[in-house]
Length: 250
Image 1 (cartoon, rainbow, N blue to C red):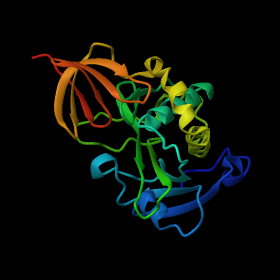
Image 2 (tube, one colour):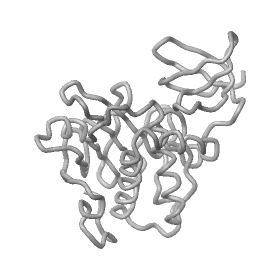
Image 3 (cartoon, rainbow, N blue to C red):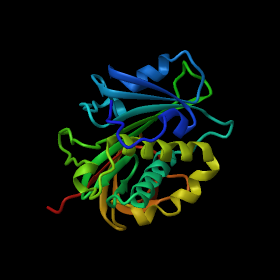
Image 4 (cartoon, helix red, strand yellow):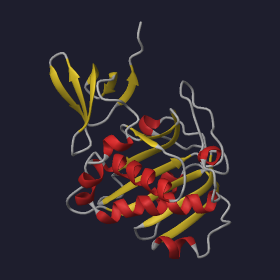
């Protein structure tokens, strides 16, 4: 479990939700899925042997970092695509307010620090848990496990007055819970400041791999729902989810 040094009160009391802390487990997403208790609840692990990101990709999970899943009762008006972006923005604001480094947001679900990935988010609506949304949170606090084809970073290296992994865990979980508590109506106002935290530049040539195939074009930012806007050959395209990569000059 991340070192709790610096926390002055219990994590559950501080966050205002039930917290289930695990040692080494397969994944917090699986733990949340099989939890017999009520939502909301935070599942927090010391390490994971089968952590995963988007599209079932492996998320390497050695001890010391943040691995959590929040089970949340979703309102009748469901969260839009931009939920993950809104959490990333809230993380950026929270870290800055606590004296940490400037972190940036890379659509659709990655946190970036100095051009390298330090965090990733995942949202799921499990069929076995109707009426719930499960928000998976992964963040490199003290170590930066390698990811094939991706530069990685961790917060501690760039946080001058590092508060400790326990305090960083509480700050990031609290920020994610604020977004969930504000509900779908709070997503748009947060996304309105996306350009201030964007890891990508307007006009930057991108390739997006989505459910509908591959599309290439110039980056136009995101819309109020959190969809990526791309100026493609046939006109503007809006993508709800997918993988983004920069087009390197030949």
